[in-house]
Image 1 (cartoon, rainbow, N blue to C red):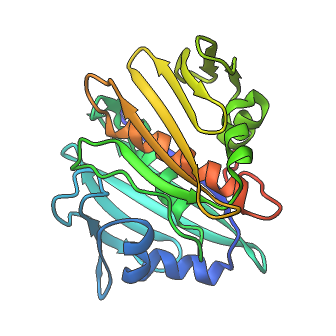
Image 2: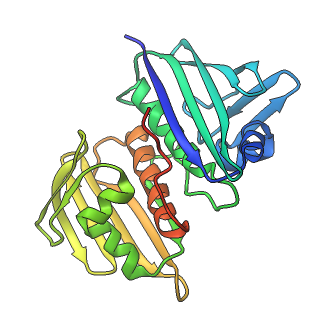
Length: 267
């Protein structure tokens, strides 16, 4: 049975800037894909950060708002549509849908795999900010390093306090903050035990399929360098890695944006 993606986000940027970032090749290479073309009847993106991205395969259907293009995946033609509507002078409501996603991608239902792909990409779309690392679909090394503009104690607290974790992550979280404690993410997320916890510096969460580890270090007076990775997974799933990277993008926004609020909206 074919599935679909539907995401709605509030982006803190003027609508004109959001639309330019969706259709300007240089901007697309910044937040979406390693390679991109747009205009003159073309719209395509490909490379390491794109599922099945060995070569350009998209076909432009409509460039102006809404942006619409076809994207063959798993041997099936899918249709992507993106709309950007002004909410206020400095905020835009963006709606993305992708229809007719069939089969699986890397062990996940295709619709779920593309949902986390677009969630990570749109989280990086926020204009004027450094992007969080993207998922390299050609690499078997699930490790990423990035800087969060907040003190290390604050960042570590947001990883170990269940209420705060749930706030930036967007789902209920249970976590006993000590080695051997239990943890669980609601909504069908992983569950397991706290494998290691070194206050202010290191947290490892173990589930059935592997271990997620955060290592924190000071980066100047008021910033934290985070090294995040997965280990002991018998088989790396790119959608799982993309999902964690999307969560790291949310964690970074949580600490760095003034008057933070979740970007994702319910239908």
